[in-house]
Amino acid sequence: MKQLYTKIHQDKTTKARLGTVTLDHGVVQTPAFMPVGTNGTVKGIYHDNVKKIGYNLILGNTYHLYLRPGTEVLDSFGGLRNFSNWDGNILTDSGGFQVFSLSGLRKIKEGGVHFQSHIDGSKHVFTPKKVIDIQKSIGSDICMVLDVCTPPEIPYRAAKEAMNTTHAWAKTARDYGENLEGFKGNMFGIVQGNFYKDLRKESAEYISSLDFPGIAIGGLSVGEEKNQFYDYLSYTAEYVDDKKPRYVMGIGSPDYILAAVENGIDLFDCVLATRMARNGAVFTDDGVVTLKKAIHKFDHGPLQEGCTCTACQKYSRAYMHHMVKTGEMLGGMLATEHNLTYLYNFMERIREAIKEDRFAQFKKDYLERFYSK
Image: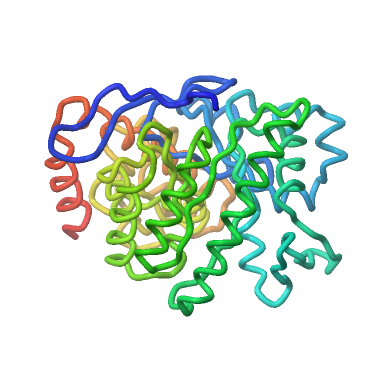
């Protein structure tokens, strides 16, 4: 399998690591946060501006892109990159989580997942091979294999059955992708096992043994308590091949990002930054600021001192408060650019702390300030 990850430096007091992931459309400096572009667009911001901030890896969603615009449209454009005018790297998830979220509209069988579209009720089947075919049409640089995502607190037997299905599908996808003509994506296996440590260990070791170019730790941030997330992330990471890029899906708040980095995780994504922005909330070093609050009405200062986004360079908190209160589209767009800029700069600060062997102190100081108000 292709070697994607190069470790540059290991923090002396934690498992945080500095590295690169080399993909066909550019090198990604890690640890790295990925903006989410579910339908082929990061909501509320031009792709050019996403690139200008510094990002060169964004996430697309296999389930949504399969339903709309569909693989025929994507094939006619030569993939999502041309279709959406994004020239950086693309990671696509398998659609497993979205299908899991459909609940009554899907049924998991040995060969794949049978589900009904949330759009029009039409019936579809995702198999391990079909999901790779869809991601080939998308033109993904990183492709996730189909897995069975499970909610917290399911019985042990059900968790083990789901894990075994995930393992079988992973091997099928790997073998299929190795012989698929024209397929250039780097496939990531996904660790499952729910919240049972023996299953987590078994899954991490099995997925690592399949020698995927990268590995994702799945089944976290699905509704469990924060301390449970921390515990199972730390435990699972111990058994995941550390020569590969390691990815935890669906985390995007500073505390979760710092916990992931501390445990040697390289990649993560979440819709939180852009969803918060559309609802008038922004990240700052002093915590999340809700712009609708009247306290901002006469505030002449920026959202965050030193931030390079358009909102912080050109507008006041008072103006942002006004935009959000009046429901102006510009308010959500400016807040989106701010949150993505803030997280990009946050990751640069994290990488610098790792380089200087002070990550543990950075994490402590950052969280104390972030939660001080």
